[in-house]
Image 1 (spheres, rainbow, N blue to C red):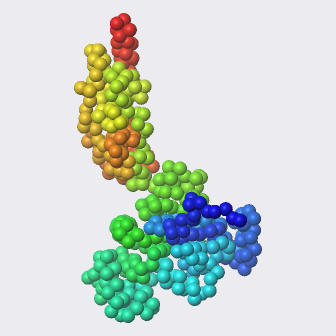
Image 2 (cartoon, rainbow, N blue to C red; image 1 turned 135 degrees about the vertical axis):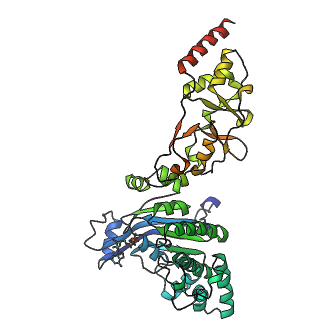
Image 3 (cartoon, helix red, strand yellow; image 1 turned 45 degrees about the horizontal axis):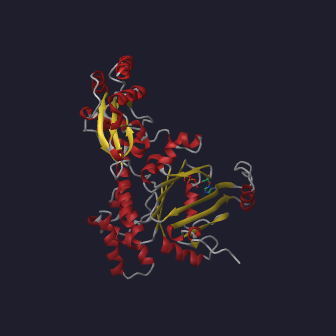
Length: 439
Ligand SMILES: Nc1ncnc2c1ncn2[C@@H]1O[C@H](COP(=O)(O)OP(=O)(O)OP(=O)(O)O)[C@@H](O)[C@H]1O
């Protein structure tokens, strides 16, 4: 008798839009043999005589509503992979499931039905029908499904409005700019109303400004419509901007799958590390990825002497002060604390500057310089419950704000050194120690 399944073991089938299992594609006459050898551990080069291994042993799941980006250099196997996802190419080994249905090895009629109901594709070069209007292009998918004219035009008009092209419905594609043509491409894919959108270098032919606009629009549309999107690109910044998760491909293999932050901060190998070297980190990283643990803050209860010691040890001129429940009370400056210690004061509260900048952990790094430059205090990273989650120490912007959002790999910020001399601090602490000991 088989073991009863516990709730935990239940596959989360409903959450998975696309499941790819050990997918391999070899081009060449002896493809099967090459794929078998690859499965037995041979390298791509070792099987090169048998065929070109375009995709090797790829496995991943794309969750519903996720933007999953496949990124890699030219020739790494991205297009081959996406073509297997919609059944345009038959895998040599492995399987693809879309919406819970296996699409590998099924009969062509069934495959067409699954494709129609589940998957739409947006191409790099728009692939619009040149002699049909924008409206007819967008409605085309419904037309071949036999949807009556009135209804398909109505649906097409709705998505055309969504992508902001309502004034262009009756125009021909050639009358539109590249960005607009691609919006028609997206509208066409949306009109088919499939849960999965496959986008193959969809924005690569557009100039940078339009491209950025399209990326933003796609993220908006996705948030609104909840589509599952598999997006292929060789552009790392695009991958980082769009991807909930990114799969990095190299020579047919997926070498890492992770969130943009994982890929950036914890690259799986030198190849990925090199790839991400030039990415604009400020757009990807958030306050939570640069903050120091809350231990870098000081509880009120330590008093001026305790605070001064900690500031000396951390070599910092300002430090955050926390109250009960680790809420942030403000920050103190070393000068003020030193003076208080010299005067034998026991209470930190009169020294606290309550004007500490506060950000949420999701605040983009790109927004921090502006906050940092307006204050000489550390930035407090605060959770929903007002608790201190981390500290971004007092930073100084060396360059103009504009510099930070370029593709530098390091942020141009440094900690300010303590304002008062460490020796003086130590002398003061020793002297006041003697006083308190003598008491
Ligand atoms: N029909 C085919 N016949 C033989 N080899 C092919 C075929 N299609 C692709 N390849 C090879 O498979 C490898 C992966 O190609 P693929 O087009 O999937 O890569 P890609 O990452 O999409 O690159 P690009 O961005 O240049 O399209 C390459 O070596 C390519 O030459």
